[in-house]
Length: 138
Image 1 (cartoon, helix red, strand yellow):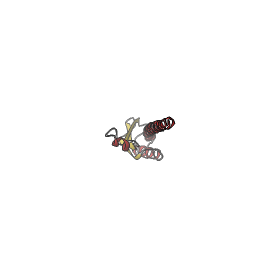
Image 2 (cartoon, one colour):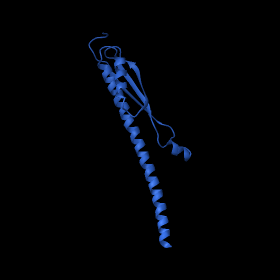
Image 3 (spheres, helix red, strand yellow):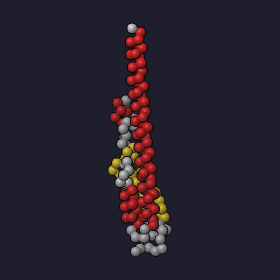
Image 4 (tube, helix red, strand yellow):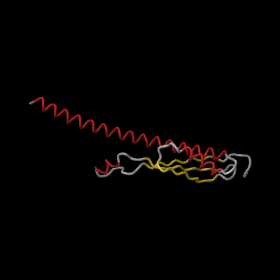
């Protein structure tokens, strides 16, 4: 009889431990996805602003196209790229903002326990470069 009691306790302990370990693992994976998407958004903003700042014609269009092409394989859902400062003349600034969301896998579970962070992760990155060149216009 004593062996059955010990086995039941061991089984209950294992079930609780595995459940907690699984939740912690999912939380770390979700946080890793958010950090990776943040890095991808920052890189896309930097790349777009750099390409736009070196373009001689239509700097804002070049920056927009470069940032959007860089985001094709990122984890961001519905990524948006905005040109905040166009950098139309040599020496002026070109500013790009990249934003999007990353899914939060824990939000369904957090709703069960009455709160917590129950939204998707919102990612925003900005980059500013100075427009380069030898003359204005094409």
